Image (cartoon, rainbow, N blue to C red):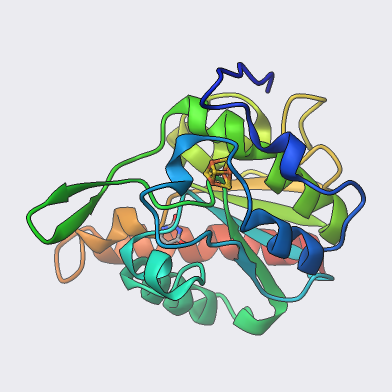
Length: 220
Ligand code: URA
Ligand code: SF4
């Protein structure tokens, strides 16, 4: 995914230490000024989980809770993800969890901070971090959750409905997952939040669990 830098959005590359392990990357990310999203955010949210994980899960960007706590998937979407991992028989402590974009993008509505999806330009600016993480972790499979993650991981836009649950080959040079063994695309857990206690939940949750199982099977 070629970066299209602008003066206020040079892209993360110059802040990414070469050949670094995950701890060093996470440390360096505090100083990233690769795009403007760092300024209003509380802190960078890097990743969680072991750096030798066979499965890497990639989300979109941190939400309100993640921004405050500095950890990915600790809010409502994280609850859905934890439930889905459990249902898929995956130990949550054995997966590496990260996001395509490392700072929370939001609009303020009174005291509330409302999630705003990152633009493609933010994904482009931030992707050097994900590339470096995947080079350090070298997972057997990368699970892209939602279309923002899929764009970062595969380096192109995909329709989730058309590719979800398939075991895809790693992308060529364009995508962050080029060194991973395989890629599985699935829905974003937050897409399920609005279905809680409604019709459609069982099917949507079941599909997410099935996709996670597919990924776990690849990593075995
Ligand atoms: N949604 C995401 O995509 N990532 C998080 O870390 C939390 C919510
Ligand atoms: Fe850097 Fe990514 Fe944060 Fe932008 S969102 S400042 S590129 S870490």
